[in-house]
Length: 402
Image (cartoon, rainbow, N blue to C red; front, side):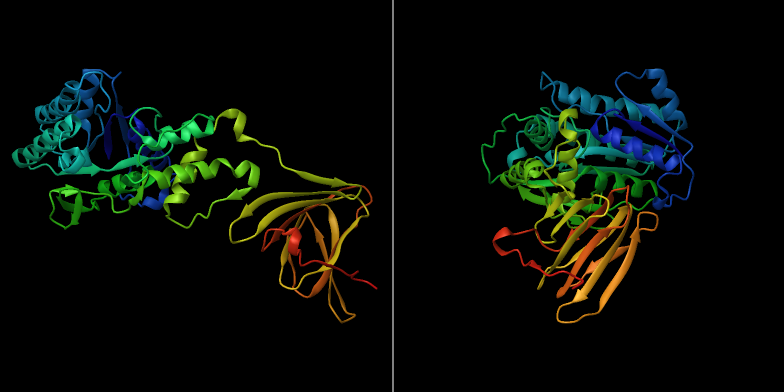
């Protein structure tokens, strides 16, 4: 397969081309593309018409992502979104190339609701009609996608994505402006879009019709859609992004269920961090025995910490009613001991960074951790099922060995 991507340096084009090249290089085999990707033709504004001629002659699939979103003159919408589409299709016709062609359109092409007077939407609708007519005339497979608001890494802020702008402003301590918190948004994550594009390469695209902005899935629909989108409000998005910024102080990472909007939005937010904010200090609790540092807090699943014990030091010697922990020694040589309260039997677990294992600290069992080395620190990653609450510590001193 030889794939032509127009608008290859744009937000969507860059993400798509990157993943196509990953597939080509054998780095993303889970897509199970039956045909080998021979070449990715990346066409953008700095390419030549000679490039376009060659690409249109040789391509076996075309992704047309080229277009104009924010011109200085609204008349440029029609030139950029309709004019280039005509040039592309005429060039394919010139070489008798009837390979499948995908068109990146927009929900604004519905010209419904708040998009009723959209110059951008009109230019996209004319482009859609041109592609549909091309399909009728040539018999080529035409895939028209009306994308909602797209977000993700590498999207240009202060351009046409409110999420990119919010992320960029918040990570750089600039204000954001939310005029109406109740504005409804349908959001499409860039990785979900790319997955659908690769499905289209395999002939597994999702077809639909539209009733205004509503997607009506149907196998013989004239249009296509991405099946995974997220409906929310502008205010909810702003609040989520603001909450991400506090993580360096609270250590609290958001709940990120699989395929959730917050998971995708948090990844997007992190991609905008400037160099000086990628690393941030943690509060090390240091004493003569070593140190203890909390690393991560979660809303419902406790915390992760790292404990460093100096040579010969014993830490712990306490038990909990309900709290439980898991100790994982990653460097050094130590001994973990547990004893059930009210009994005399001591359980011993020798641990080492040379053979990493996890050891549970059981509720109702007093426990300790001893650094057996005379020269090296003992470094232990510790998980606890709840964040430490000093007003209800659930921690009771009792030496393991009497």
